[in-house]
Length: 413
Image (cartoon, rainbow, N blue to C red; front, side):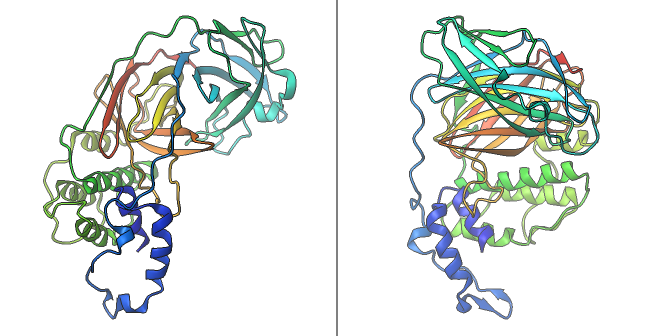
């Protein structure tokens, strides 16, 4: 029942807050069950029909700027445990409600979580930032470990906000380290961005099934398993989406998902057509899934995406290892896995393709509040060792955004 409700929430059919008490009531209703399990679908309650969803949160007004910090040299610090970490600034993001500098540090590949170079060294008030007008700023650090636990993914949030018209911002991130100066007067070169509806606009349920497929594929590649847990709830999900008018009876997305399940050796509902060919991105990911040849480096990849389905996103740097890459993203107006019913079915699908032709799918992690969130997109399989640019595609329920960012690599120490 919760899987069905999560799919309806992801399709925009209903709102999470309104769906949860309905699900709890339905789960407690003995009349819904029989000896053979759930009875055939019956008409949806009014609150679970199309249009019964809350309004999207308001976005901050004003421009958002993402400036690569590519001129910064790595700073080496020694932790209390004796380990050393060389970290690099990535991208400075300036928005009406936040100013954030993302950083990354390469840590010993012990396979165990780290506190990170800044947590280990407890910088406290030793960090400083100032602009050309003489204004001073406080820096607050937050972050965690990457998917493979070999990078410390961090960021500095500055307060107060940088006033409009400031020409540069200078940040000193460690005692004795040279200051990092980011030019705010000359905006970075514009990034080519294409925005519009998906090439083949589909019912909202098609997008939900594609999100389920991508989550299933990412989990299989990330765990290294050729088989995975079956999808016993998929038949009920498809039936509910069709009942709600969010999915056509002959769904291409359902056929794609069934074909992927067959390729991965996992169960799927009987009776679904299974085409012989997978979409190019999925086929490429499966073909390259065992690669361990990614560059060990960082790239100050930066881009500000236009509003899509009520949310805003800014690409804020990338770091890579032989096994995977992590793309940093700041978001507004949306958060991953929000609500008790959303599970992994968020309304956005991220994919990337490097300039060598290798495709990558993204697994999301993140946290935040106050209308914005910090995302970590783990890209699998790893980037090609000769990749020099990355095409990033973000698909929502009704729109798609595509941009290409250069990968100006800086080697990790």
